[in-house]
Length: 109
Length: 451
Image (tube, rainbow over all chains, first blue to last red; front, top):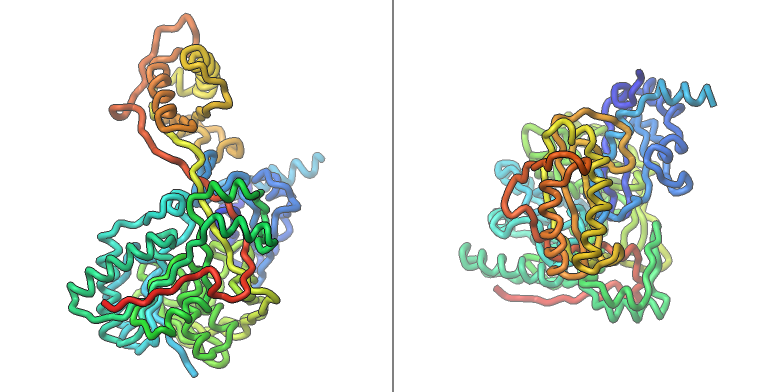
């Protein structure tokens, strides 16, 4: 078991205007940041949130030990099919992602 | 030169620490600036031209700010009045201000800045190729623009400064960027643009850039080489980390912030502690754009909705909730077709299982074992009567529908009576575009009132 949320200091997500969600991963220290920077790829995040990888923006910010991912919402904020107006619960998906399983799957693949 | 901006909180209606406000006034600010709106709470407010926050809460806080302004003898600015910043919400704030001017025996010059744009004008500008899409691109055409209930243009610092230039004691502005009310005076006084916009972005959510977000009040001081920011509540501190991390917040790109007339670039910004509560920032850049654009926001009604709620506590149904919903959905489609003559495209019935996957839907990966499941039913249709009729038709089956034909009829928990709730019209955001302007004031309207 190596859940992302248990490895880093904090993960949060939020709407960034009505059309984007942004997920901030505060790693807490440089060692964790270096590790997460290697493990949390654009492909992995795009797959987790089921968005086309070419629409996902990834920012590595070593000065803050932060990784940031932004992607267009699959459903526009507050529309009939939206489930989470502020998108703040979206972070839970990444926090509960088990990296041990992910890397095992990669090995098998 | 140095320009000081006092920011009482991230939004009017959310509250702030009164002692911190008094401490802020004592620092001799040049202006008090607060934001009144956001799209954060969804399209309903812009669609209806109404406020998310209660009038009483806004009035109580505005009273304190009007008193602080009187004491300091400086301008007071609110941007994005009444959540959505429509013309109706600027007038709503003007009414509140009028009442308070009488209550506080204040004589005031008030400037109102209106940001609302008529759909017909936007349609014409689309034809004139003055409307440009932002990513992700939302399809619009002349017919779809015509159906928008309210469109607002986001004012920048230029329009706020036009309002301040009237000599107004108070500026009540319609929709504007979150930063415009804060950056306006530093820019008018010739402070560097990078520092003015960056400082405004850091201060726009009030004390969210500090270690105690709920304390509200923030002071911003912009000068020739950068800016300083610090919280006024004694319990709060600004640290290089708390300040620099704020660029991440609600911002898809942490290094760039687009504003009317250009973009803030903070790639090379440096954050340093002046002492344990104050942070100094230098190296912020402003990159002017070739054309002056303002962002547009629009919301329109897309139908009507009624909701129902039932709770499953029986373990047999909790375990099989998804199967039950599938079976009930098929049954209801048939009932609605035979009894009401409606086909699937005429309405929409969606079940959300609270306790299973209501928040994340098909993204959910966790399999849980809840003791109960909330069944939220969203019924949408093109008229209010139809949505209500459909909900009433669904009601008895939501209460009693069995998992198998040969089972005894269950009766689930209805938490209230009536089980259906009429939500009225439902709205959607339908513009993600900018409008090219020849002059910043082209679509904005300014009025001056003597109270």
